[in-house]
Image 1: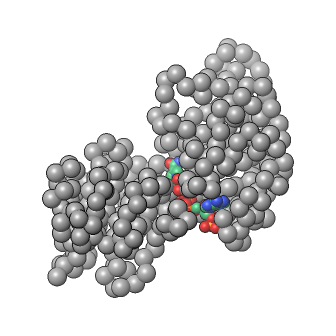
Image 2: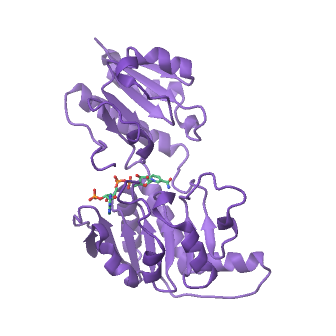
Length: 325
Ligand SMILES: NC(=O)c1ccc[n+]([C@@H]2O[C@H](COP(=O)([O-])OP(=O)(O)OC[C@H]3O[C@@H](n4cnc5c(N)ncnc54)[C@H](OP(=O)(O)O)[C@@H]3O)[C@@H](O)[C@H]2O)c1
């Protein structure tokens, strides 16, 4: 019996063009008759496929309530995002394995973090703010060599960022839940111990999954511990950083600048004060997306996992529901 795999691509997701049916069929062609693929874009197609589906590849969102009844054979959901907090909030049946796209963004995360740090180091947020105000206000900097980046989250995103910054001769203090050593980190810290190093950070980079532990992790008290010249980068999730406190510190000059790819509401409302916060650059949650490459990397990882699944081997990119990532 072929494995029944259904691919569902949410209509509203900006990554939908990455997953056309032909590309999926081509990606799975080498598996031959071992896999039977169905493909859907609408809720009707999704509902029709659920009764038989054993594996669901999901891009964007789909109605996932009451899965035991609607999808009795479903055993694995593979999602094409790295952050799957909304899926975990649905309380999926425990017999369903959940995998994510962690790793897919790594090369782009490395470049984006390097770009953001170089922008902050060279006062680009300040220069852009001055330009908008028609103000000639030069500010220069030395290179980043020898400066310190504190990186919260040392997985695919943070680890990629650490490698890129290390190659510029920077000092990297990493932070993770486990505190496991990382080849690109000079120092590793564990859990909340990062707070003891905030005063050393020329740059703070947030690259964390959203979990109960990381929600609201960086508030006014943590920002106050950073040096006045420090720059903040958030490529994780907006809920991890008190953006209002950040904006207040940027406005009174007690922080250097910030680059936020992840925002507290997305899209940011037109009346949000963050748009006008000085020395702040907002990148609309598009900084880590590499068009074309993203879909290719996701499908390669999914195909490799399907081969493992068919062979009865352990999957990669499995989400630990007890940890929330
Ligand atoms: N801006 C974007 O477009 C974009 C793109 C992709 C992802 N994201 C967000 O970035 C998140 C991270 O992605 P990833 O692929 O790097 O995830 P990942 O590979 O799973 O890495 C997560 C890292 O966070 C650490 N961590 C988890 N909880 C922690 C805690 N309470 N304190 C300290 N460290 C903690 C983990 O520690 P251990 O190493 O000890 O497990 C790990 O190093 C995603 O969940 C998503 O929300 C954003």
